[in-house]
Length: 202
Length: 104
Image (cartoon, rainbow over all chains, first blue to last red; front, top):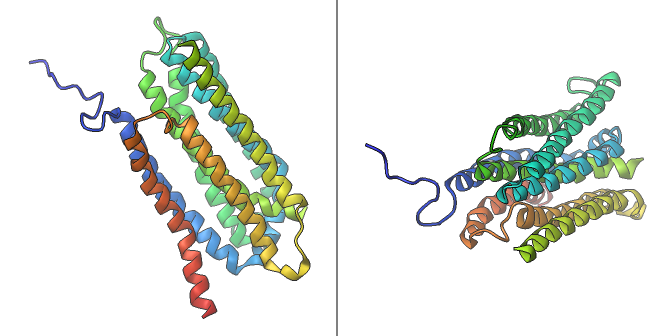
């Protein structure tokens, strides 16, 4: 009664099923973020003053720190996949651990950034900069949710790697890596949209 | 195997350094590149435009090397190009349509 089906690779494309599905998912995620970016650009171009004043309230220094954290964690994620594929569980664990730390570091910086905004009354529903900060919190908030969603399976893989034989599924780590790099890509686009104005006005 | 090892790690490191460099360039362009007052809002658009051009270069590097499109089956690139193309169309076409509608 054992099934002879092997679903590890799509038979026509020769691409691993998990990877293909993740790329399809990332395609749908791109459409999701495209709605935000499209609306942001249209409203920004028709409200230069409002968006200029709003972005001047942002800290480009903190955004720069977060960008370096995400770029670094992209590198460590790629290195963790590389080492797991070569059965080096110790280095996989090291780089996966650094990637998780990068994710938490990003969220901590975001916490301080959000706290400062709330303390200064800069959030949607206030008298000033409401339009800009609606977008700011929506885009960075959704991005933050994506970071959290990436950290959870990474932690599972990290702790599972302590078991005898290490983490046994390099393909799954590679698939998760695609997601993590995608989260980095979205930040790469949010960074100039929101932060270029902040640096220019300071 | 050692050649392959060296090549991939070297490619990762090159992309990492390039991403860091481009990030600094984005901030430097916004902070120190000043456009004439007479340009008005065009200067602001130019700042964001430069940032987006740099972002596109960063994205291509991440997708090609970190996300392994360079090393994967070529077919996968076609699978990826469609949503990426639609992303840019959806992000920017709305703006051009709006501009075109209100400047006629």
